[in-house]
Image 1: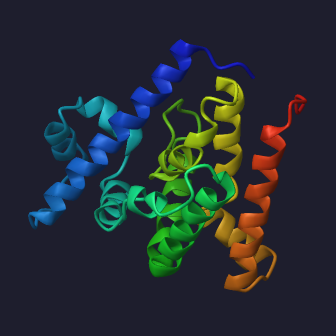
Image 2 (image 1 turned 90 degrees about the horizontal axis):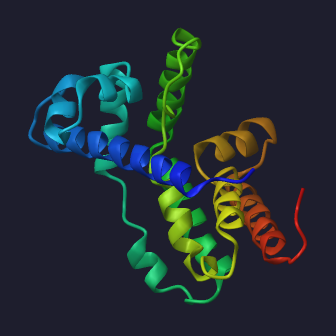
Length: 207
C-alpha cells in the first residue's frame, strides 16, 4: 500500500499528539497528582475531545503515563552500536524492549487488558490507535542507516513489520502460545527481525 506524504504527515502528527498527552500526564503524576484525561489534555495544550479519543478512560491514561515515566531513551544505547550495522542496531532495540517487558510484565499485561476492553466497549467508533508507546520511534532510530537506501514506503513497511517482532504482544505470543523461555523468545524475536531487514534490502518487490 502506498502511503502519501500527506497521510504520513497526519500519522506523525497523531503520534506526537498522543505522546504529548502521555508526557503531560506523567509530569502531573510526578507532582503527586492523579490527572484526569481532561487535566492531561489541558496540560498538553490539546483539546479535551481529542484527548478522549486517544484515552477514553482515566485508567488507560494513568497506566501508560506510569510506564512512560520509567521508559528509557534508546539513543544512548544505539550510539554504542555500529552505525552501519542495522541488525546490531535492531538487536539493541529488541533487547531494550524485552527487558522493559520483563521488568513491568504485570503492568504491560494490564495495559493490554485495558486497551482491549476499551476496544470492545467502543468497537463501533472510529478512533485513533489505542496505544503506541515508543516502539515505532525506537525502530525508526535503529533503521536510520537504511532511510536513504530504501524507498519511503518500503522503509515504513519495514518499520511496521518489525513492530510485530518486539514488545509485549510478541513476548506473550512466544511465551504463552509457543511456550518458549526468555532466552529462546528473544532469540526468536531477533531472528524474525533480521529476516525482515534482509528481505527489505533485496531489490525485488515483496508482495
